[in-house]
Image (cartoon, rainbow, N blue to C red; front, side):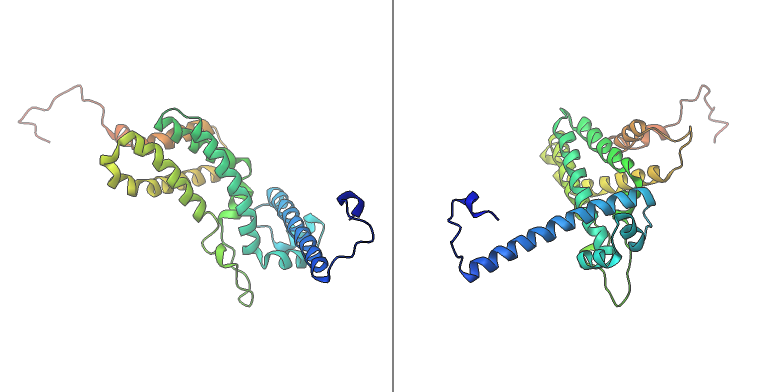
Length: 242
């Protein structure tokens, strides 16, 4: 640190406590920066290697040792949690932006579903990495927050987001229904989306836009119209029965 930059004389002596606090702050800042860089490198490694990449694979791709990753994250579940927090924060911001740009409840739902599918499809390997749970060595228990995968709180937040436009659409008289609908809707979005992600590319696989519109239709209308039989061109007489 250059004291001239701060306006202090070069001969100024800081109290021992202030000096120690400064060193502690610099060390903490260094650790946080190093942690962010490791998360970025792990994300790149998983994108290239696959969601089942080991800690050693990830460390090798990052040009360091796996002991460094264990020191910063505890175990693979802890790394999943850390990567997941970064990825899901970005997804949440993107989905919020999409929802805010909509002018109608159904349009808002479509925008959110589209944003979710788009970001998950950008790197299915990273998505699978942060949504799966990797139990570690029994002697090295996983990070408590990683239990059940790091997506739990993310989908809770999204459920609250999609409840807002639906309240506006249905009105207060439907509040009891709205209380159950958001998380049920998120379950449909997530399960349909993950099944779509895992489906091999083929002419029969829906496009991202088609899938987003289909999921939105299921949320708003259900599948009843698709199950309604076509009107018969002939009528059975009373004698013919069934």
